[in-house]
Amino acid sequence: MLRHDGEILKKLIGKGDIPISRIAKQMGVNRSTIYRMFDKADIPIDFLLKIGKVINKDMSPFFPEVIQAIQEPPVNYSSPKSYSELLDERRYWKDKYINILEKCNSLLNNQLASTKSTKVNKKPSND
Image (cartoon, rainbow, N blue to C red; front, side, top):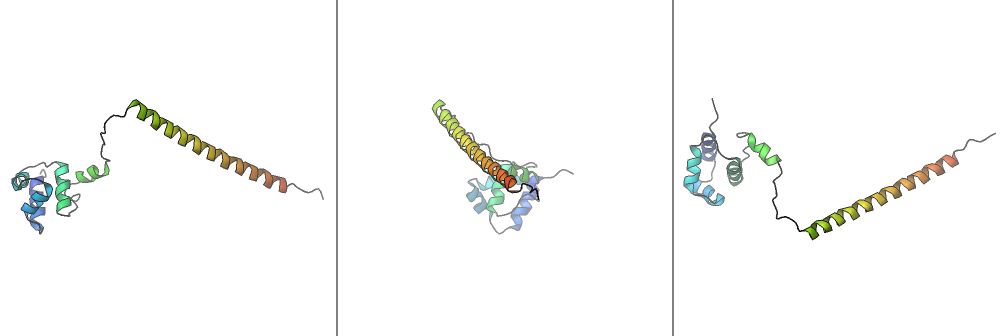
């Protein structure tokens, strides 16, 4: 038997202490929208996440696909950067990379000098 999301949602909301009118108000929708969702076999994940947040309920045990939606990072579609912004960003990362390389080289040189001085001190004696 197929899962009916609306029936599950109706039971979850019915067991809670928050009236549907308050849930609808906090979600920014009409009460009728929530009642219509009770009739749907498939409810959008973003709607389930919003209701879960409002009723303070983890929806993942009832709707496993919610876990995947939570774990995926949101896509941020920002406006495209200008050419000068891209050049500035490239310069920033290049300078940062060079700085890290210089620190790494310094650490390697210090370790190499330390290793050489340790070997010089450990020369076998000809007694």
